[in-house]
Image (cartoon, rainbow, N blue to C red):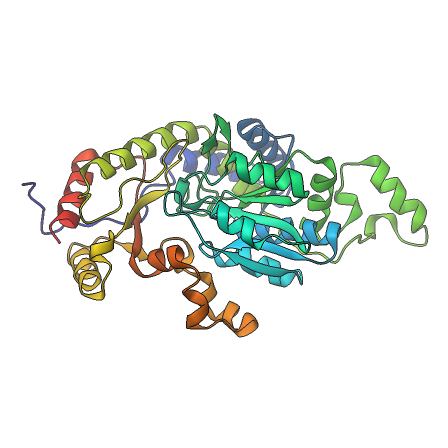
Length: 398
C-alpha cells in the first residue's frame, strides 16, 4: 500500500512555461521590437511546418480561431452543405460550422480511441456531405485507412482537429498531415504553449493564401502570392491596393511575443511527448481493469491527459458520486465528460438550434458513456511515476 500525504494534490497542468522560456521572452522584449504579427511569427510558422511535415502553416491567436478559419475555407470552396462532426469534441469545432452557415451532422465515437466511429461515418454520408471534421481526442489517433479511403472516394474535404494531440501518428506519419487542413492549439495546458495561440497547417498553397487573408481582415496584401495580388489589383483597379478586402473575414492574428515562446517551446516538444506517453502507459498498467477501461488503442499516441472511463458494472450514479468525492478529497483536479465536457449535442448552443431531445441522445451510446462516466486528469512531462502510483491507488480504492 502506498502512503498518501494529507497535503496531496494533482493539478491539470504544472510548469508548462519554464525559466528558459521566460529568459527568451525577456531578451526579446528588451530589444523593443515591433510586437505585432511579423518576422518571428513567420519564423515560428516555418519551424512548425518542418516539425509537422507540411508545406504551409498560419499562426493565429487560438485553436478555436484555427477551427473557424478552416471551416471558412470549406465554406469558401463549397458554399453550402453538411459537415460530419464528432459528438465528442470542443465546442468551437461545432460552432465554426454554425458560424459559416453549414450544417453539422453528429457522429458517435469509438471507445477504443474516442474519435469518430467509422461505421457511423458511413451511415451519415450522403450527397450533401462536403466535409468531415475529425477530432483526435486527448492524444489518441483517430485516422484510419477506411476514413481516408472514404474521403478520397467521395471527394470529401477532411479537416483534422489536432488541438489535444500534437505529434500523434498514424502509420509513423504525424496526424495533421492527412487532411486538406489541420488545426492545433497552443493553449497553456496543451503539449506546448504560446499561452494562447493556434496553428493552421496544410499542403495546399490555395488554402494557405486564403487563411493568410482570412486571418487579417481579408486583406489581399497579406497574401504571399504575386499572381493573386495582381489578379485583385487588375480586377479592382478603383481601390487603394493596400486596402483590398477579398473575403468577409476576421482579425485573429497573434503576436511576436507568442511566436517567440512557441519557437522555444518547440525545442522540447518531442521529448515531452515521449515522457507523456510513458506516463500514460504506466498509468494504464497500474489502473484497476475491473473498474476502469484500460484497453484504449494507444498506437501512435501523443498523450494529453490520463483518460478514465468506468467499466460497465460501475456505470451508475452511486459509483460516480464516490469517485468524484474521493478525487475532491485528495485535491485531484478532474474534468467529467473529457474533451469539451462530453456530448456536444446536449449543450445549449447546439440544442437551441437543432432541437435535440433525450430520445436523440440515445442514438449515440458511446459518447453518452463518456459524457456521464468518462473523465480526464492531468498528465505532464515532469510527473513522477511515484505520484502516478499514488493516483492509481486512490482510484483503485474507490
